[in-house]
Image 1 (cartoon, helix red, strand yellow):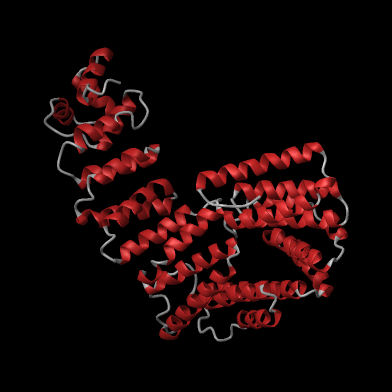
Image 2: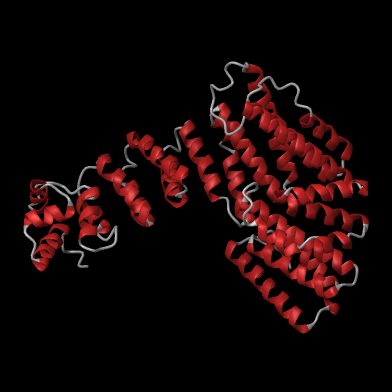
Amino acid sequence: MDSATTITTRLNDFMKQEGLTLSQFAQKIGLNIGTLSYILNGNRTLSIEQLDLITECMGLAKGYFYIQYFEEVLAESTPNWRRIKPFIYGCAEIGNWDLIHKAVQLLLDNLLYSPHLFEVAEDFYRIGKKEAAIILYENVALSERSQHSERLALCQYRLFMCKLGKDQEKNYQAAIQFELFVDRLDEYDQLDALKDLANTYRSLRRWDKVEETAEKLKNKAEILYQRTTKYNHQDYKLTTPLFTYIAYSNLLLGSVFEIKKDYERAMQYIALYANLDWVREDDKDTLIWKEKFYAWAKMNTMVTKLSAGDFSVLPEYIQYLESNKDERLLSLLNIIEAANRYHYNVDSILERFDISSIVKAEHSNDVYTKQTIEERLARLYFELADYHLSKGLYKNGFKYLVDSLNKSESINEKTCIIKCVGLFESLREKCDKALIEAYQKIITEVYNNEKKTGSTIYV
């Protein structure tokens, strides 16, 4: 398409080529003949909705004329939100992020447009158009960087959630960057923000940050809960009932102390969310969440005992594993970690469960975030490798070790990469040529990724 040719020229040429009269063309595209005449004569500006109708009628893909529309209509006139808003939606539908960015740039000199752009970004966020939402959030945040507004903090919160992905190092940087803005949020939004931060740090296994964030979450949630009554508890917007943020902070803190091997304190925190008699509400949603915490307390009690070397809970924990498909990966990981720590034989358990089926099922798990699942898979493969290699089962052991290294490399999980390399190098003499070549290939990819990002990992 010749960029020097205007849209109206193209429409007139199309009518001539197809032998259409003005009336026939107007009827074909569903426009009033007078409206179409004004458009073709340059007396009325095309709306994006009209342009989409005309484009479809001409048998062209949606967005075919968007670049010209931006240059002829939007860039050459005073910014008009009624024209720019549908244009942004149209660009989001066809995935033209560059045009969205250009359209937004037309508005940024005027802070009056910031709330409008934010509303559109929120809509994109709700419907899952994250790429488009990121462009708008970033530009709104840029325009309000000196305002210290709640909207600026919300933009940073949404950007944090949108940017979470497979790369664990990038997830950590996103969390650190967003943490600076949490206190600027509305006090109820802070609860969800702190919970999301804590979950991210938990998937990263940054336990010092989990503890710090969970303590903040607990303090804020307790203050807000004390301020509310049974009758005004629905006057705020939260993703779950208010009491759950208190209970969940205790769950997080229990996990922290279990990792620290302070099993007594871990059990104390578990007891806090196992007993929720202090909760004032008694609606259906509250009862459902209370049951969930009772179940998690029961499970985490077994996990903590298992971590402490008490394998008497193993039969009950196996029953839990069998009946809770969403927890199978985590449950199996906990069992293998404990087995490796205490040199306990769990061959019968590994024979009982199909590892590949459990791993496959995890990809449809909607309980945990993708980054949490990927990190757990990397750890599971490593623990399985360690278990088999310690028993001299080199074929299976090295297979799982390569699987762990591959998974760790794909999500940039440096801690697990280092553990894999250490285990591999300690048993290098047991490897065949093909295995060493596969190992070297992954290590080369790790090294190249490190060079690109400028970070350092010694392997």
